[in-house]
Length: 311
Image (cartoon, rainbow, N blue to C red; front, side, top):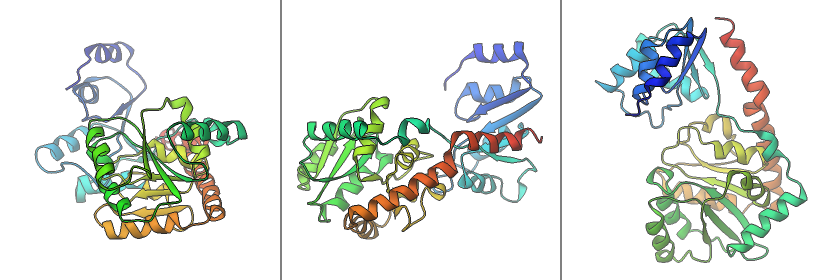
């Protein structure tokens, strides 16, 4: 229900040539900007995906379609965003260009995996109790139901992980339940919790880890996947993340998890955990190349502007 009339007043005074509204239906401010802000051209940016599309029926779907028809161009993070547009409009899809504008990060902060950064990450993991010599699966996630944490803990309880430590980094309302579940499943020596880590310290954690884990039930377009891939980690991720198609080439730079199939998830976890260090490093390099191709800042912005400036 967020409402900021100052933004609307400012836009009416400025009358921009291009107006980009992020999530036109996500707040009253965005909806008002879509409807009332003057502009020459307008772009709607949204990160919905087909795996968890939200409410598409009446009245919510109708409101979304009505708002989007007020724009000259749609911007989505990736191919699944384009599929969402087709799902939302069906046969009545408007003839509006669709540009890809992905969620990106400062890749220079994550791609430089030097010895100093690795040493800092290793020191951090030791400080929270990771035994020396353990391989590390890094799992940065807010402790909320959408992240699939409790479901993955159940999977991990049935998988041999003695050579691995799974490090869950984050805070959230499920922390107490997660802590008790770890004890209940006998995972206290294998799944370690860390409180929130400042953003500028995260690269060192990626650089000292061996694998990235994100088994979300719902996750529009997680930036942590992009960060991990720029840092050169193989990934073990849910099919339900919005940037799944861009992130994973299964068997090349990682493994896919289907949150609705715990038996299959266990097989994928075993496959990842049984891989040699050499295999993981090779897959991590494939992640790095894929991240540069999909989410390199300059090329991503250039591709977006190429579509915009042709309008």
